Length: 333
Image (cartoon, rainbow, N blue to C red; front, side, top):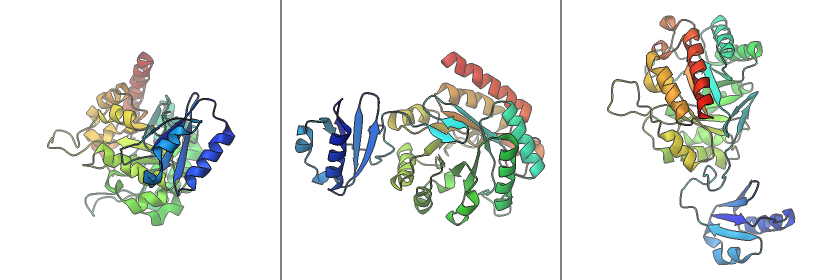
């Protein structure tokens, strides 16, 4: 349920109304825009007398929200959320270029790639320290040491870093990580999501391999319900019958999500396509679709990469992609 307050409602009036609603064991989410203030009521709203609430002097109108996700709902929060991560901003017109290797392999590798992508305009450095792999025999990442190397790359370039968490037991290792990524396989690991909701760090939440957009938003709701509203949604392709690409990149998810939620939406064309030559056109398409950022895998020697070399761009290829994306955004402005 949402209550839209009349223009000119005083802070004292709103404080009194919020206290009354909380007395009914409701959580109240306050969204204040330039012209309108919206109170989002979360909990058992059946005890709220809608007619009584509507009759209050400061209340413009009251509406029930049928969608199961509340805090992620644009009806609760009409203005776009802007996520701040170090020097980078995502959402609300701020576009972020996230780039780096699939996995951290050495200090020399991650710092070389970090410097290269920054020179090309990247705003956030990505790199995998913990790698969830289909095969137990594949490279599983450098784990804690990999995070330490990412931090060194951050110190060398000033770029904020994003890396994936696999288990909440390793959360202490992420103290210097700017954005914690939840991978597709963990999108519905609800215990993990709830614990991340208790942190103050931005969370990049990837869509699951075969999950609907509502399920993605409900996973975001798990994080937000624990107090962390800094969530970035990521479309990374879903599994379909098509075999020409690694996954099927659902770019319609971008405008659909922007209509349903205030949270930023980024796109990962590298994991979606699985092929380096497809990354650039799909990155441009994602930009044109209105994504708030794109996430690109870049490796200084893809043929020797320990993980996902086939979908990784070289630094010169990334530089060319970044230049085209900037031109595209200029045309769209």
